[in-house]
Image (cartoon, rainbow, N blue to C red):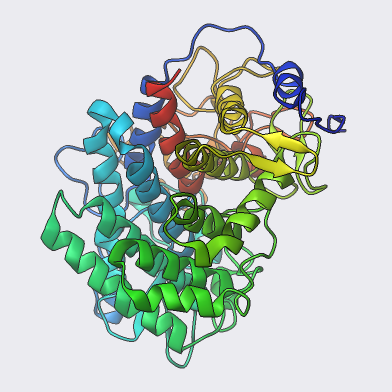
Length: 491
């Protein structure tokens, strides 16, 4: 049963929030160390030929021939989670959020900025390969049923590396729109650091968005067997078109994108499902991103997006949150469905980003009779981050390798099987099952991995078969990079 909280009243709002969700007393967190580990995790998810500066040494080259069945080089990119598939939809979202983390909080990353940039480029180099053929986007490599039938190291992979694509006859505005967003956001990241690469990213974003908009449809229409139920587009492709346009507007400042957003705001349902943000649903992100311009006094014509952003904030605040957003007794945001930490990190990122935009404009959010200040939003985001790092009823960090106690049996093939160095011989598809079922800790520590997390009662089974709780994903970590960067500079 989730915690029931009385409604917030203006004078007591912030105090009530702090009292109800005051963290258990712990030592001060080392947010910079957590940031370093959060970024390091992405090296454990790398597919393809690993570079000489690879820091997680127990991983080796894998899937280096991806794309050969269709005559393309599609090596590289990231495995999305604890399996060995390259799913383009969540990979693109991960890239967008990593880029947004650097755009808003890169100045707080200190010595880790270089590693964060490498994490983005590892993804964008792959996305450029996946979009190199005009009018085609290669959206996935690996047959998920073949892969999920095996428990084997990516280095040993002998499962089907089927390549899946979208094109004019088989549209996928969702994954193409998100890919355009990722390329556009990353072009901002590299604008001053690598201008020619930045231009390449932006130009590709423009053409991929044009393709997404011209050939409308959800990719799960033609690729259902390959992408469902894993990364099925449940929410529709309309939000990704607005999201892609919003990032292209931010990256290019071209009037055509501003007009596209203005013209399509209602048609593409900008105000829908405001209390959600993740790989399938971009609505809250669209509204927060566009609101920055409104709050800076630059885009009054987008004022409805700011109203939507305010409604989003109100929908997740304790005491007045939407029924779909609960809080565990220990204070963790909880949404029904799998892998809850993806909601915690994504929603917290938006809370923090919006609190910064409000602060600069000296504004608050009005939720009925209540006023939510930027400081209150920041405090709620910090409370979620602190919960992940160990301020919770189990006193457990949900980031592997951070703190004294963290998950030891994560649902992750490469982490749970002996490394190639420790066991040079092949471990076949079914031979890996004994490692999956073993009660022993994983032999390879996937430093920085944040798992799906506890349930609504703050309980956590540290066990591989409980994949919704024990599996890490790239899109849990991506927004956490920005959060940790901010709190490493502002305790």
